[in-house]
Amino acid sequence: MAIRLFDFLASLSGALDLMSPEVVGHHKRVAYIAARLSRRLDAPGAERADLFTAALLHDVGGFSRQSRLAALSFESDGGRHAELGYRLLRTNPLLRGAALIVRRHHTPFIRFRELDEPRRKLFLAGVLNLADRVDVLTFRQERIDPAQVLARLTPRAGEQFDPAATEALSTLAGEADFWEPLSTPDPVAALTDDAALFRSQGMTRAQLAQASKAFSQIIDFRSRFTATHSRGVAECAVCLGEKTGLSSGDLTAMRLAGDLHDLGKLAVPSEIIDKPGPLDEAEKKIMRSHPEVSEGILSRIPGLEKVAAWTSQHHEQPGGGGYPHHISGTQMVHGSRIMAAADVFTALREDRPYRAGLDLPRVTAILDDMVRENAQDKDMVGLVKENLAELDERRIMAQAHAAEDFRAFYSGLSPAAPGARD
Ligand SMILES: [Fe+2]
Ligand SMILES: [Fe+2]
Ligand SMILES: [Fe+2]
Image (tube, rainbow, N blue to C red):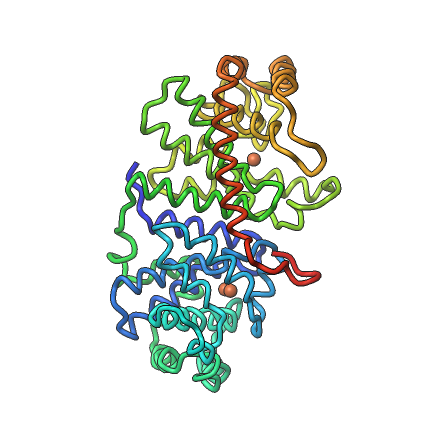
C-alpha cells in the first residue's frame, strides 16, 4: 500500500466539511490561502508543510453542526474547538507539528506574547487565523472584492492578526492569480509550486496506522457512546482476519478499515448521533448514509481501494436486508463479511445509551439468530464462536486503551458552554 500523506489528509479533510453545506470546501480553501501566505512570507519548507496540514484539519475539533457554524461566524472566539482539535492531533507523530498551530488558530495576535509556546508555531497559527478569516469573508460570494476584504482585515493588524501576515495578504490580494482558485472545487490543485513539497510525501505502514488511529478518534470521540467503538471493531476485524489466513498486507488494510469504517459519520451531526430518543425518518436516512459516505471518501485515496470496499459494505447482510445497497451474500466481499461480524460483535458487547453491554452467551445467541435470519454470514459467526475468548479479550484490551485516550482527551477541560455542543 503506497499511500501519500497529502491524498490521505485532503480526502479526510473533505470528510470534515460534509457536516453541512455551509462549510463545504472550507478546509481546502483555507489550506490554499495559508499555503500562498506562508510562501509569500518565506517560511521554510517544513513549516509550510506543518501549516498546510494544520489548515487542512483546523476545525477538526468542531464536533457538531452548531459549533462548526459558530466557528464560521466572523467574530467567533472558537476557543473550544481549537483546543479539542489540538488534543486530537497532538499525540500523533505525523500530526504533532500541526497540533500547536491548530490550537491557536483563533487566538488574537496580541495575546501571543503571554503564551509560553514555540514562537514559530504561534506565527504560523497567526497565518492560519488570517487565512481562515479570508475564507469566512469571501466564501459563496459571487465576486470577491479584494479591497473590501482588506478593509475588514487590515485595520486589525497588530491586535487580532499578525502584521507581517496581513501585509503579505495585502500584496497577494493584488495578484491576478490569487483569488481565482478559491471559486474552484479544488483550490489546492492550483498550488503548482508547492505541489512537490505537499503532494509527494509518502507514508510508511506505521505512519498510516498512526494516522488512521488518529482519525478513528476523530470519529469516535465526538460522542461518549461511541468513544471506543472503532478501535474495538478494528481489533476484532484483525483477529478474525488472522483466523481466516489474510496476508500481512491485508491485515494492515483490515485494521485501517476497522479504524475508518464509520468515517462517514463525520457527515452526521452530533445532534443526531447523540439524540436521546429514536431517530425520525429524515434522521435515519442521514445516519444510514454513512457507509456510502465512507466509501466515497476512501475510494478517492489511491492505494485504499480494498479498505473502501470493505468499509462500504459493513452494514450489508447476506440476505440482502442490510444497507445502503441491499446487496446479497454473493456480492459481499470476504473482507466486508469480517467487518460486518466485527462491527456487530463489538456493538453488542458495548454499553449503549439504552442498554448495558450484553454477556457472551447472550451475544452468541443473538449472532445465531442473525445467521438464521440471513443477517450475518454463517462461517464468520462460526469463527467468532470458535475464537470467542481470544476475540473478546483482545477487544477488551483495545477498548480499554481507547477509553484511556478518551479520558486524557477531555481531562481538565471545562464542560461546553450551556446550550453549546462540541
Ligand atoms: Fe476554527
Ligand atoms: Fe475554519
Ligand atoms: Fe457503521
